[in-house]
Length: 131
Image (cartoon, rainbow, N blue to C red; front, side):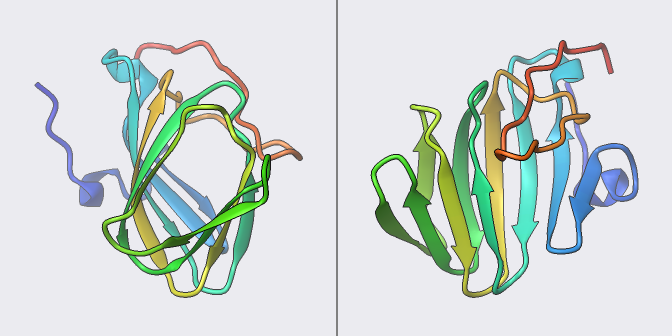
């Protein structure tokens, strides 16, 4: 059994981010459960383009508002608390925040915690080390 709090991972290798976003990686590939689980916050008034070519991602929005645009077909969706989106086709997408957004994210295959978005918003597929 694994029990973790976001407080205990704050400031560790599981807590990554930049000026306008932060991802607390609660479960990582090294935990050996076949997925990773993150709490991600994105600051208000920002725009981010992502393209997970190597991962399927499910996102559950728990706080905030914004829009999600599927850049493969230019369709835009409103995001608000209680909204879930699943990138099951590896869709390149854009998230625009109106207010600070907090979301819970699941990745399969799991991320290791060492990934960095490349110039296309892609996470590379990295072999999972034991944690």
